[in-house]
Amino acid sequence: MIDTLPYPFNEEIKGIAATSGVPLGETLLLNIFYEVFTVCTSLVAEDPHGNLIHARNMDFGLFMGWDMKNQSWVITEKLKPLVVNVDFRRRNNTVFKSTNFAGYVGMLTGIQPHVFTLTMNERFSLDGGYIGILEWILGKRDGMWMSFLTRSVLENATSYAEAKKLLSDTKLLAPAYFILGGNQSGEACIITRSRTHNLNPLELDVKQGRWYVLETNYDHWKEPLFLDNRRTPAMKCMNRTTQANISIKTVYDVLSTKPVLNKLTAYTTLMEVSKGTLESYIRDCPSPCMPW
Ligand SMILES: *[C@@H]1O[C@H](CO)[C@@H](O)[C@H](O)[C@H]1NC(C)=O
Ligand SMILES: *[C@@H]1O[C@H](CO)[C@@H](O)[C@H](O)[C@H]1NC(C)=O
Ligand SMILES: *[C@@H]1O[C@H](CO)[C@@H](O)[C@H](O)[C@H]1NC(C)=O
Ligand SMILES: *[C@@H]1O[C@H](CO)[C@@H](O)[C@H](O)[C@H]1NC(C)=O
Ligand SMILES: *[C@@H]1O[C@H](CO)[C@@H](O)[C@H](O)[C@H]1NC(C)=O
Ligand SMILES: *[C@@H]1O[C@H](CO)[C@@H](O)[C@H](O)[C@H]1NC(C)=O
Image (cartoon, rainbow, N blue to C red):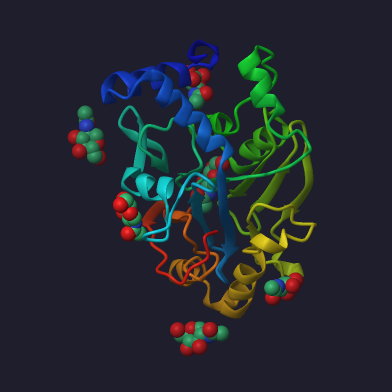
């Protein structure tokens, strides 16, 4: 299957397998798994000076083994030591930065300093589902892997507008949410993707009182699953913080509130496009804490 993946991802996965000693099949499988099993919270908020803050919790490892003894997800714990911040350079100049799991070539969280910020959340949807991925494996290859698209955008898009267009219009193998922030006041949106379309786009609109956009794993125009409502608590925290007090520090607090922070949370990343910064923290959620 490795040779069915597009360049440069095929070459990079081979390179990682060869260098790390992890068998190629396993390296490949891990790269595909991240596409399918991430549940997360992402937000972009604008402060009163028009400064944009983009942040996310990465929650990963659902249903892949629960350790009864210490109340944790097996895979989540194994991933924490693999969290890395990577600085991607061309001719030794930073093109973009990401928070990543070592060995993974797609992008789930990244910034092109002074231009845009981007995160991807899983969209569990009957509308397309994972049929596209199954079809790819079986030989019908129609669409792009979601996290390869985010990687291409971080590497090659030159503006918020271009990033938005690519993320909205490129045909995908499966549904996804893209959370995109630009470098100007008012530039942030949630792109809810079916395999072919950007459904019901949601934009920042400070004049109308929408000074932040926030996405978990449910369509913003629908109620979240009652068993997994991280959206309402996160929004309640944002509303209580108020725009006047929003900062990297207060956003970190919002993302540290249970159940926005939960047993699946591997890391929190905070990005500020105007400063070009990306910082990340490996997280623990002491019991009592929701499993997701
Ligand atoms: C839980 O136990 C596993 C295996 O013993 C260990 O790898 C992991 O770090 C522990 N997690 C916590 C939160 O203590
Ligand atoms: C690349 O940049 C880094 C940090 O800015 C510097 O330490 C390093 O020497 C540079 N390498 C080359 C080959 O210029
Ligand atoms: C970005 O563009 C360059 C030049 O066209 C191309 O070689 C590279 O593969 C692209 N990167 C990705 C991740 O698609
Ligand atoms: C925003 O990004 C554009 C490129 O898309 C760049 O020309 C402009 O200088 C950036 N603005 C700021 C304030 O960094
Ligand atoms: C937060 O504030 C927005 C805008 O005023 C409102 O639409 C939303 O219902 C509030 N959400 C919560 C959970 O308080
Ligand atoms: C905003 O921050 C100031 C100073 O840190 C604090 O005194 C004030 O209570 C905060 N306001 C809200 C609404 O949290």
